[in-house]
Image (cartoon, rainbow, N blue to C red; front, top):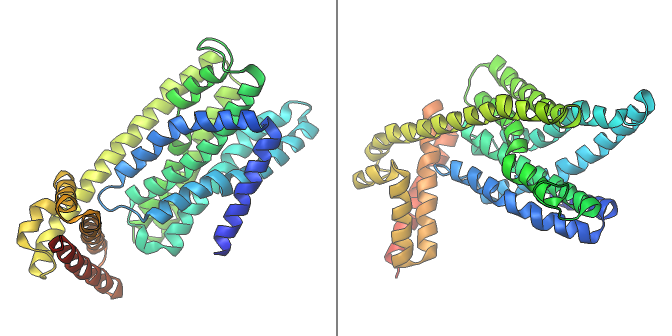
Length: 357
């Protein structure tokens, strides 16, 4: 409760800052335009998270932290760095310091704080690389959303809507909303991958080195991007975009594809044992091992018995995935017994709900 109150206060602080900086009309324009790219970005991370969907409350809390908490933290520290930079380096020096040094270090740390918090205090909801990518991506999507409101609003106040080849909101949207909507998520995903690697390792040095390595990767990418936009020219920016950012983005996509296929294999291997334990029916193995068939099963039940029954089946499928992932890296213990009980209860609920028409 205290956390939600603080997060709400951070949101009010960000809203007040945006209003004071660009004005109400420009802020509303910025909000409207910023909504366009954030939808596909969030949808992409929800699509990645289909085998074992994370709790919706945690995902939206991650988005809210990025949009409010991380943003306010970055504003306070980056503005301070800008003032100090101007004092030490002269007028304009603060912009460079804030963009190239302060912003990458502070913004990536602020966004990663939520992901690390889930890993440390909600360990049962953090199973590996995919979870790290999803939580990091949602946090960064929220951060980018608020940042876009500011940038689009400021540009509208200075240049209006403009055109494709002139300064204004249209050109800014092409740059930020079309060419690079995934930049902030891409940076923070590096940290998420590091924490995800730590979650899947039993070695203490990996648990320390992987998150630190991921964070440093996020900072370097962020600094390169800001340096190209702040210190370089158009050619520099395009070189960084096509020679560094685009290959890293493609590499992240390849990793996501590999990780999702690995999740499918883990579940497929675990299902026969669950049949032997009497947790699932033999006829459910092929369905539970395939995302498309899982989706068809949910839709069929929802069509026949209603949306509540469809959600019960979804909960059962998620419980099966969670048990499979846990057994892949652990053996026995109280947590496994709780997960086994969750499978039994969710299956009984799903079967009962499906019968009620």
